[in-house]
Amino acid sequence: MADRRLQVFYSVARLLSFTKAAEELHMTQPAVTFQVRQLEEQFNTRLFDRTHNRISLTDAGKRVYEFAGRIFELYSEMDNSVRELTGDVSGVLILGASTTVAEYMLPSLLGNFKEKNPEVIIRLKVGNTDGIVTMVENNTIDLGVVEAPVYNKNLVVEKCRMDQLVVIVPPNHELAKEEVISLETLIQYPFISREEGSGTREVMMDHMSGEGLDIRDLSIAMELGSLEAIKGAVEAGMGVSILSRATIIKELKLGTLVAINLNPPINRPFSFVHQKQKFRVRAMEELLNFARNYCEEHKNDEIAHNYNVS
Image (cartoon, rainbow, N blue to C red; front, side, top):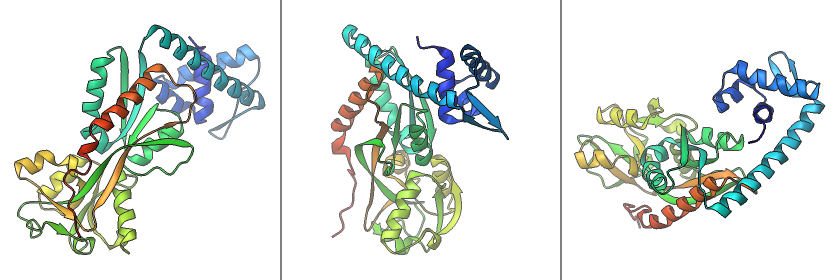
């Protein structure tokens, strides 16, 4: 219902990029440029200064951006009010999730949500934790689900459940019969690491720092951005790694990997992250409430296999 030209302008102004706005809006860049030019013609003034492949808001652009934000907030308030009255839950929600969460937690949660709310369309973007938090900060996604602590105090962070990280080795590895090992022992072996920006890597680095170690102490053989690639590399005997226990259930059952607990253990939260908007679309509120209930129902799953070391 809101003016499409204004929506396009608002995205460009927020991201200060026609290219990024086009990606976010699933439009071509010429189409984005056309919509902005139409709005500039309506106001008979430039809204952006374009110099050296960079753009910035003119004074008029800043004024339009400020009013546009207020217009969209009022629109959301109106939309929520009417949908509350009619009980309608529909619309498009854009979620972002870090790899572990997207592959091993969200399918069940979103599947159950869609059963109860078939009119809601969900689009999922997968990336590492840093990337998902950035998307929430830039308001390019409605809700992020991440696997590492979030330190931006301007965002709302709601912990869902805890996750345990374990060492994984192939069954013929000399460590395979160990029930628990320390990081000091682990750093003696070739290590398959997640990429920079990964929640798993960040939590592991924080843990190492607390133990007086540095990631440079690891003998990193490879850095991989895929959980399946890491598991495959470890199965092939190329090194050891640290992953969420939730990601290796199948491999443990098949006997292709062995999980070893760490001493002290490494636990981390799976959390929902979103903006502190006063008003959100009703579908977003429904998803958040559904997710909170899901987390409550699964809270007993938290660190179910944690090894207690005295």
